[in-house]
Amino acid sequence: MSVLSQHTSGDLGDRLRDAYTVTAEFMADIISQTCRRFPSTGQSGKSARVERLIQSGAWTDAAIALLDLELPQWQIRRLVYDEGEWYCALSRERELPDWLDQSIETRHVDLALAILSGFVEAQRISTPENRTSVPTVRRNASPLYEPLFVDNIG
Image 1: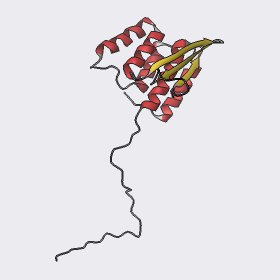
Image 2: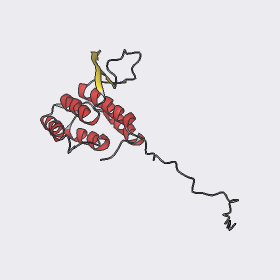
Image 3: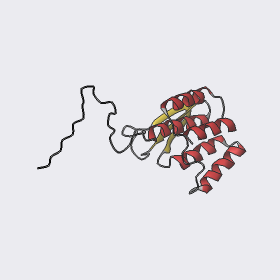
Image 4: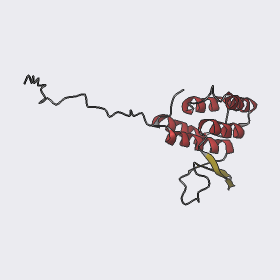
């Protein structure tokens, strides 16, 4: 399964924003584009639960279970329904005051899509960049660069 890239998350974010409801196909797209642990061999019970919830059409519960499986460090901080939209805030530090917390806030007319939007954003910022631990060396040498062999036999 692929890790989120900036381009993919933008497309997926647009699809989430424009969607009216969750479908099994849409949920499969979200999982294939964002999830690294699904299906998880070490947590087969959680993976099976997500699959059962998707099969039964319990989209909100499936979104919460997917969040628990993929990003256990993130939790729902706040769910609020106001003027026809669901507002969802996800946080790593739920016990901190709002003004200290760096939470992700999303909104949608559908509760499951509001949670999934937050999930996709949390997954995007939690995904490590494709960098190695060793610095890279430029491969193109300067045209003035000339290798020099020095034999010190002293």
